[in-house]
Length: 361
Image 1 (cartoon, helix red, strand yellow):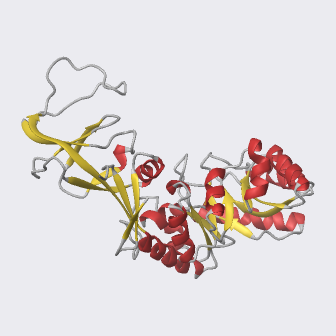
Image 2 (image 1 turned 180 degrees about the vertical axis):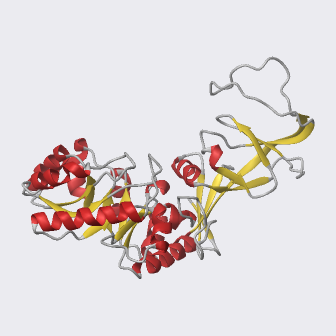
Image 3 (image 1 turned 90 degrees about the vertical axis):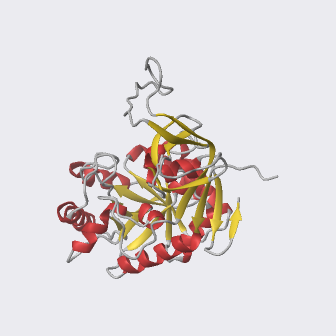
């Protein structure tokens, strides 16, 4: 007998089509794509769909995901987004390019590359205002000067990250600034930089408005490929599929209950004091899905249902407009955060669909 679990259905052909459309869109202006695989735990079936869609680089922040994809035979250039000195030896063995902002990490990479008789490729990240990773522009020249002394490191390019920690929007000003940084470095050091990685899925509006993309020739896209949207306003990108992933959960209780709890309210299971709106007696359903499975705040029901709350194991929904019965399924759209957690959870079954047949893993 099959054991029911919450499941996420993944349409591989939609992901492949999104990758193809985006590769062609950005490719018109010489911009290559790195498909970011971290939100799907480096799942080979999904990454193969990206590659089939024309993505040449696959980027992930977890070395383990890259090792898994390489073992599965994914044919791509692998880029590590988050580099740590303690992993330098393994990075040199498994990764083609890594993003870096600390000279001490480069020294360790160079040391292990020397031991492996390799030259490790790096993209130096520049701080452009978002205040996550990056060398400050005033320190960039000295950083590059020191990096060039490392015999087994090759500076493959320059990059920046925006619309992440600080939510800073990629725009003409900061993208032009990045291009100017590249031009200045090339003049000073008399070398060429091959990869100028200007950002991520938040760069769509900048790109559509830009008359000239300057030196930017690469973007790192995860959410646009997987969920079909840009990440400044989370608007759908025309022509892309926005429902390549759908989450399903089972109804395990359906009853009419008051909308106000009975008794003195104190902290809930997560240390917060909840508040409630008195809507009278309503039909409520409990789903076998909770915070241990998914980021509940990132879910949107596909039907006219309201999420009332969730504990670690249960989600409570107002189903007054739907006569849900025990055993019924409820489906949800996911945002990036809920996709990330659902794909990471061992309690959510993954089903890969080529829009005609499904294969459960």
